Image (tube, rainbow, N blue to C red):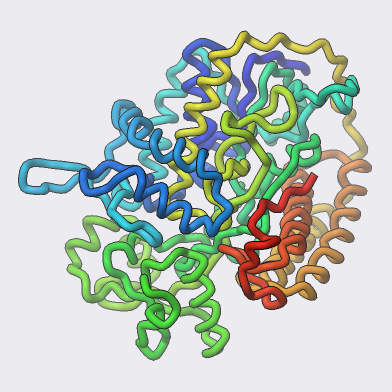
Amino acid sequence: MELYVENLIIGSGIAGLTLALKLAQKQKVMIIAKGGLTESNSWYAQGGIASVLSAHDSFDEHIEDTLIAGAGLCRRDIVEMVVTSGPQRIRELIERGVQFSQEDAGSGPTYHLTREGGHSQRRVIHADDLTGQAVLRALIASARHDANITILEQHMAVDLLTTDKYAPDFAANHCVGAYVLNRQSNVISTVRAANTYLCTGGHGKVYLYTSNPDAATGDGLAMGWRAGCRVANLEFMQFHPTCLYHPHAKTFLISEAVRGEGGILKNRAGHAFMRSYHPLADLAPRDIVARAIDTELKKSGDTNVFLDVRHLDENFLVKHFPNIHATCLRHGIDMAKAMIPVVPAAHYSCGGLVVDSHGRTGIGGLYALGENACTGLHGANRLASNSLLEALVFADRVGATVLGETAAPMLEVNVPAWNTRGAAPVDEMVVLSHIWDEIRRLMWHYVGIVRSDNRLQRALSRITALREELDRYYWDYQITDTLLEVRNLAVVAALTVRCAIARKESRGIHYTLDYPEVNDLTGCKDTIIR
């Protein structure tokens, strides 16, 4: 089956849905959601959205905080554009019905702003500790009632359709849509599009311990790279310092806002250790906090450290962190009376597909936004709660760019229907499960918080062999969603290792034992892989 659409959006998080609503003002849009509309990193975002909303704050301060966290690799023009666009994007969400948390400041209700690591001011607007859910609910409701938007849930993009592959042109490569798998029927359709947008989120599931849901397998990043896009800065995987350490809550985050409101990291002996690592102590940037915890665990041999909020008022904790409080209680932890066991976990990628200030990749008709894009905002380390801000701003900017241009004609390219190959072997699920597990363990142990050249080379050698095995499965047997995910993870793992090997210094999130210092002479540049 072949379908024709004006705009094909692959991914249904905050970036994809916001973009869809922008484009739907004038054009038809199809959204491909790999699972349901709530199965994305956006849904699990707790802390909030960083924006200058207080008279005590300023754009200059937000810009400076972002640049400092980015450790010399942020693009100042992008930082300025995103930061100054923030308040308007927040107002649009409020108009769309998002109920952000409020407080009584004496002169009447006002929005409650919290402070997170690396921020010099309180500027993070939030909906209790479930900001992602609050924003997504409003966007989903709007999208479902928009006649110009078609939503296909339980559908997964297999690969992008490009002219380089089906109608080579010496002058340019152009994207004309994607092959799309219906995960319920296992039928693959050809979806032709004038414009295609990759909004598939991150790839945290490439690591053994992660805050990301199972859907975060780097699909957009892998597809974009296979199509010919450049990727950059994948060595900068941000590890969130405080993931709940519990066998039945392996992906649950204890929001950075908990430390912003006074939470203190302590070791098993009850010693508050962060002051020994940074002047900002528990409010230091995430890379410093994650490395500090990693160091403490290596010194002690313990499995986790603790976040202590027992000195805070219990009513305050329940009011401001209802979901965290309730989740901890379900796992036998009363955060008002006991310290919360936490460990670092892979959380957010600051790198991705290289795009310009309007979300364009190097391939005509193909855009990327959200976590699978590298815009230059985050540099070597993302400032807390700048990610949802980036998604909102770039969705608005990409939408305005596309609607402001003359509608692109559908290119006349003869794209063959998908050729269904032989049945999958009976051992496929076992083999794929083992490969997935091996990749995640390799990445955690060799490409984790602290790295070395020897570890990275070992990881690359083994991942290269696994990719060859997965390619045989891909070309010889019938496609399944699990095969696609593991294949994409293997691509992303290899690209991450290659980026890490290329950076001969320690900067931001990337720390290597072989080059422990920042090298501004050779290192202050993006790591770009073609």
